[in-house]
Length: 424
Length: 144
Image (tube, helix red, strand yellow):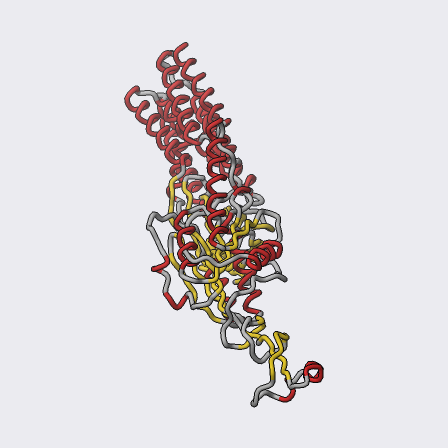
């Protein structure tokens, strides 16, 4: 433990020094008597100063929780010699909340009698946290020294975003050749009826439409749309975020990306992830429940790191964006670089849909006449950006606070139903 | 004397300010000012040894200890159970030991020819008692 002198030690030393010096110089024995209590305390404190011997063990009863859920943090303290008072402070990162025992708290320890303290840690915001850091401070009997130490249990805690259950999904224009749940636009073997065509040698008998054949006097067969899977790439714009007291655009974007990844993966689609902002992170498209764990783990590390580097699509590995993939961009449209990449993606032929996480709930109007004017200009600029995307045929839907993501996806689907593709 | 009173008043005001704002360093400076005020008062007074000096010292000490205690209580961590009693015992024990020590120091400073040997013996006993107290205090268990 590290020993720190208290203010009292300095003050009492100063008083004793002043008194003894005054007594010596002025020949005043009264001053010795006046400072005697301070001198006695200093002497006793310095003679008896011994660092306490503490053993501490920190445990967390889980490593993964979903937002809103809780885990238990236990601290076991034992002392080799009795300790009058040990103050305990659990280091709680922002995004977590501690309940149960008070934090900080203080307790006395008897020699060889371990004491157990417990707290309930609530995950309030998704993220990757480092728990288990507990500060211990012991004050000596005379209050002249503090002994401090940090017990670090190195306990990681992953708080997963609480994803909304989705019913609606954005239907990709293109599908892959593997089986899935997405009804392909092409014709082939499948359940969904597509069209009728005349029988040709090689057609299966069970595909003959007998009613149509009887009516037309020749054999006709049913054509169907096959069920295929698709490549979905979630594009998370982390160039900038707007943050308020209750959350931020990145929080909402991560929750949306988690919900989308979970939904598409249950449909046997392949899901990839690109986080482009201050840092570039990507996950190649893959399928399966274990891939959802990889996607969410990657999302937990998402952070809007400020950067002035002009990053473009060239930095993204080509395998991350397979041809024909549906790219769903979740962006607050706050940084021009993110917007330019979206236009570039569209121009290169990728099927693109943009979910704009509205930053407006997290912003305040600057004071004064010019503040209001500046905000109006900013809003107009955002409208212009959205209008530009719409002219290009890119579905842009604003996701406002309190609106279900399902409604946003329905709006995207409605736009894509009537939008024309434009190459720029 | 008025100047000493002025310094003493300043020390009191500083102590109040330190208590109001939980300012630990302020208590220290108030203490220094108080000792300085006493020094000025003694210099301005008669040349005889002030017999109330040990009492003044103990009161100053108690005031300082209580002030620091008050500031520590503002800390968000609650105090462990039984700590106030143990702390009070320590403070009173130190004050009593200091009172004895200071009294003996003052007695030894006053020349008394008729008490020469008695005073020496009393001084030795007191010194042994103080050393025993100093050694015993830290070794005691909390609450013991």
